[in-house]
Image 1: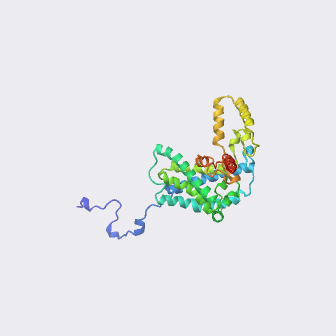
Image 2 (image 1 turned 90 degrees about the horizontal axis):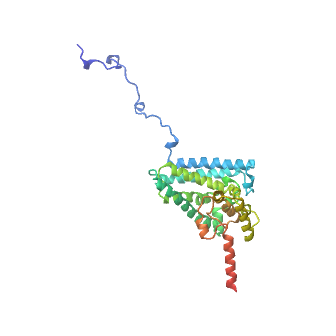
Image 3 (image 1 turned 45 degrees about the vertical axis):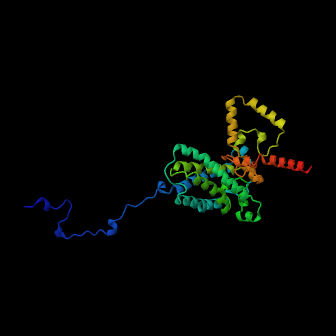
Length: 327
């Protein structure tokens, strides 16, 4: 009589058939195939990809506006020496061969893009700290290296490549020599990021900072100044300056036309927020507004009197003082 222990298991073959298992050891130890997803990429690479999507989508939008001549009253810089297709290869070279490796290296070194998500208060506090850090690094590099009165530095850094576009095409924001790109784009982004603790390992902070930076740079170099829609015409670039008495009379007329404190407040805020004169003036004169621009606090340019609307006044003060000392 067969016992329970001697009964064959379900699905087992009788031993006398002599059937062998021919499954290879490699197949037995094989793991399921890995399908990479966007979320599986390093955070630095994800952030770079988001920044590229934002940069080139908005850049193409500005290019479309240029070609279709949309909002012509806001296009204050019309000279375009280089076309979009001519600028694009250099822009992509800088973004792929310089920005992406630098961001990934920061993550590998543990300087940025690592850790847990930021506390909401830390998230909010880091935003103005990033803006301030960006301004300090960019001002120092931009003024004291890229615009230094040194022939050999000018030959080495070739900042003139960037100025050749005259800020009339949006993607010219990243059209520059490799060394210039590292000083003006990579360092002002990654050094403050590391200084504030790396921004944590959450995607929201990094996507916001990288995307906002891309939009700001594109707008500064687009040749557009949307503040002209909200600013008195006599304050726009290229308009004949008015005397103090004429300006006061013009403002009185505007106040009479714009009755209502809310409307005046909103109009003034939009005119100030969208003001793009600073960087346009930098590309015109070169020695002004080294970090003052759209989205920038403009603290150093104000304190050091290099802001576009202060530099001429400062030069006049110096000339007057020089004349007084010579008397």
